[in-house]
Image (tube, rainbow, N blue to C red; front, side):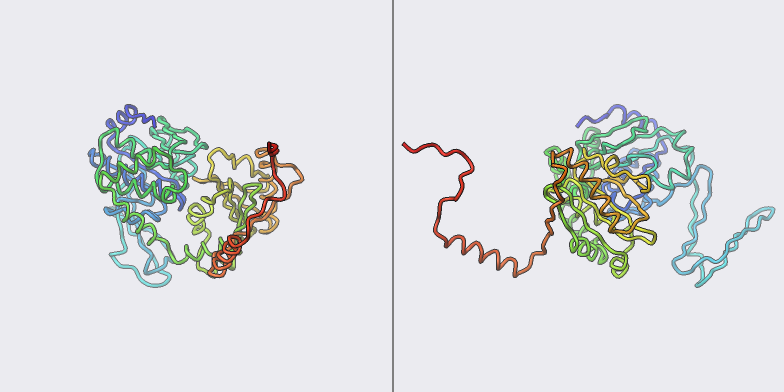
Length: 426
C-alpha cells in the first residue's frame, strides 16, 4: 500500500485545528473507528480536533472512552445552547433581547426541564484542515455539508477512502480500492509515522473486523499483515469481537430472521434478494434506519452473489438497499430509472420507488438480468433460477446423514455416461 506519508505529515504538522468527518450512515462502523483512532493520534500531536459523526458512534460507541464524538459541527463564532429533551417535549420557543443579555423562553409540551438539561458549546476558531473518512462524495456527509458549504470550499480536505466511486474532491486524495477498510489505510499511515498505542490498535482492529465481517470478506494478505501488527501493539481482538456481538440489539437479531426467512438467490445470475413488508418490521419495533447495518453485514457477504437486494415497504411505495461484494460492479449504472430516487452509500446504493414492493422488485431483477446477461454471457431467454436458502434443522441434518449412509452402502457401479473420450484398452 502506497502511503502519501510526506503529503499527509506536512499538512497535519502545519494544521492546528482539524475536523474529522464520517458519512451520515449507520453502516459506516469502519469509518467511525478510523475517526476515533486518527483523533487520538492528532490529539497526541497537540492538535485541536473535532470528530463529527451524526450517528453518535453507532456500533463503535464502546470505543469512545473519552466521549470525543460530536453529532454536529459548530460554525466559527457560533455559540450553541443545547436543551436535552429526554424528560420533556418542546411546545414553543421564543427569545427576548435585553440591553445586556438575551432571555430564551422555552415552553414544555409535556414534562419539565431542569438546569441539568442545558449544554453549552462554543464554536471553534478557524479550521485549518478537514479529514473525511470513507466518504465517496461530500454529499454523503448529509447536513454537515449542506449546512456549512462555505467551510468545505474554504478549507483544504484530506480525502481517505477505499471506494471506486470516490469523487476525488480533496486537496489530498488517498483512495486505495485494494484496501479492505479505511482502518487498514489509517493503520498503515500510523505505522509509517511510527505512532501506535494499545487503545488506537484496538480501535483500528475493530474497524477492520467490522468492515471485513471478521476477516471473511474482502480481507487480503496485507490486511492480515496489518491486523498482525495491531495485535502485536496490544490490540484486544477478543474484546472487539465480544463487544461487536453485544452491540447487536434485539431488533437487529429479529431483522436478520425476517431477511433470511424470505431470502432467495439465482445461482446463474449471481443475484440474491429478499423482501420485508412494513407490518413485519414495525411488529419488530425496527425502523428503516435499522436495515442498513443488518444489510451490510449479512446479505452483502453472501457467497456466490455478486449483487444482493433488500426491498422493503414504505408509506408511499417501496425502497431497496442494493449492495455488491465486488467493487467493480457499477451499481449506479445498472439500476437506473427516471422514476426512481437513487442515493449512493458506502457499500452500494439505496433506491426509492412509488411502485408496490412486488412491481419494484421485478423491475430491479430485470435491470440486473440485462447486466448479467452481458457480463456473464447468459442467453437472453434464460430465466432467473431460484435457490431458496433453507434453514438448517435437526431433521435436515438427520436426512442428510441418512442419505450419505445409504449412498455408502450402495455397491459401486460405472457411470451411465462418460463425459470425455475414454482411451481404448489394449
